[in-house]
Length: 89
Image (cartoon, rainbow, N blue to C red):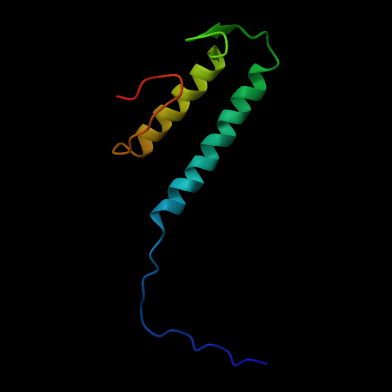
């Protein structure tokens, strides 16, 4: 049986991993996006062709990307991203 570790005395700071916060937020957004897609699958879907018959996009694709980009921009205004359905600014 190993001895118990001594308890720290005084104040100390635990630094949170900033990337973990981003990852946690990304998981929340991914779940929201999944719910949007799940709801859209219950309805009739219009499919549009972007650059070729193999390059398709739906209104749901565009709505999900818009939700993701606006949510990220609101929480992390300095972050940059590249989307599939839109051009990066």
